Length: 441
Ligand code: GH3
Ligand code: MG
Ligand code: MG
Image 1 (cartoon, protein in one colour):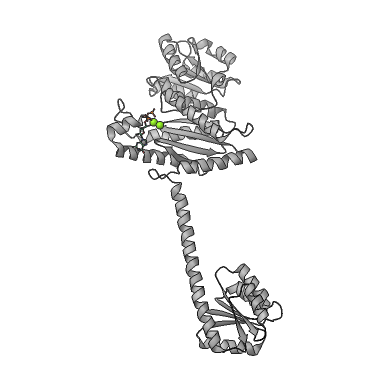
Image 2: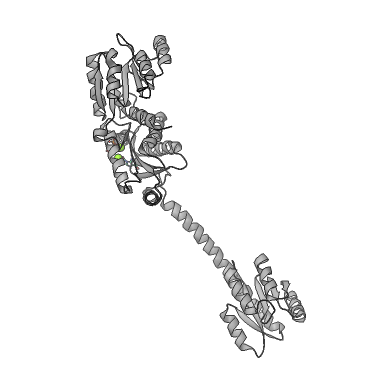
């Protein structure tokens, strides 16, 4: 053992050193209490044998300080003269383990050190067990908050993180958004491919969503085939861009869904809602609104992102320029079912004037139109100072023909939609396009 001797008497130190050395212990010596404490804080000791009366710190004070700072247990033996039992008692109260009377008796010292060996070993074992317990507890803590199937954080963690965010939001005005994801037609997938394959899908979907999360965001399995993300410092509008990226990432996995017609793949629908620090909206309300938005995404045809804030009169307005009345009516019905307010213009030459009057949130125009084609209309919109930021989408059946490419290259619309794709399917992306376009740079 490493023994620290604290004694101002050189003779006493010499005797102690000889006795301890004979018993096979290593010694460090200090001339007074202050030096002893300094040595102790610097290098520690298994045992301290300390004189009672020393310059600087007394043995009792030294003991108190050691007890207040020690990281692992140090066995403290106080040296007192035979007639001085009251000091021994005070020393024990200060935390000393034992006392030895001067003049030193080697047998007594050996007995005391035997106890010291046992006690320090016991303390060390306890400390080791304690550290192991703490490690185990930390692992259990993480385990209890992790979803076994997907490895994402679980519902418990979600509730805890959300409560912490709610608090921060209320105190410091931090914003956050919540996005719910639900796998589309998942029961059908399980029914056709089996539950084990369904589990694999859940794992892949969670991994794809998680890969798209920023480090400040987190993904949780809410339950069943529902996942939820918390996006910190994000408004509904800025979160929408990230959530659309997440939705697209799942679609891009290209996991065949044999239950669906044609070559359908596994997709997710998403609903997004944001906190409002000024209104002190409860986190529970944000979650509920995100969930409601998810339901609307399902209702609007799935595989899309629906945002909470665009409800009622805040619905997004789209100006649809389409000379074919049949097509115009069909597209309008699709866009309306996705929650947009749609104004149809069949004469492309009057479209600019209508747009200036109505200031729509987005314009959709066919590429091939008599009088003014969609590309020319797009350019006209782009060069009008009042409309230049209006998201513009061109629909065409020949997006890849050389003529279309030449026209569209000049016009730079925000998106080109294949006419064969129902506009309803494009609606989620249109929302994001509009909202992202609105976000100030
Ligand atoms: P929707 O597009 O409306 O969301 O249709 P859906 O079929 O996905 O929704 P529904 O709520 O009817 O079915 C959800 C299914 O998810 C039913 C349930 O068996 C399945 N599911 C939930 N948890 C798990 C899971 O851990 N593993 C697997 N394989 N399936 C799960
Ligand atoms: Mg589902
Ligand atoms: Mg569900």
